[in-house]
Amino acid sequence: MDISRKHFVETLASGGALLMLGSCGGGGYNSGGGTLTSSCSGNIAANHGHTLPIVPADVDSPTAKTYDITGSADHGHSVTLSVAQLGQLKAGTAVTVTSTAASTDGHTHAVTVSCVIY
Image (cartoon, rainbow, N blue to C red; front, top):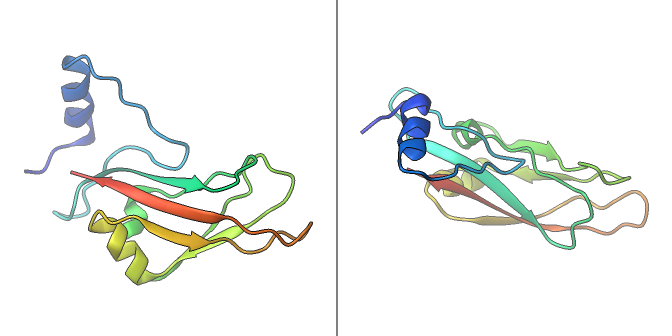
């Protein structure tokens, strides 16, 4: 059953539920009858201000996606999700990748990404 974003939010609101979206997720989508995904989120190990700005529609990308996870940190990192990893996310499987090294001291972060699938 395909539902619109408006219907999804109205359904949650009528049930007294609180919809909380992470900094890297947001809203639902339905790409031409494809999987309806409500949100994606990233858990960044040893985090100190980084955020992962992934949007649910990215799981349908035919190419790898690279994200800047700088957030409010004073240095940058990026993470790349392969087409295969995006497919795993679409299937509801969490994926863990390692960020690029920081230019300040060379540290990296393990980033675990997951998407909530409806």
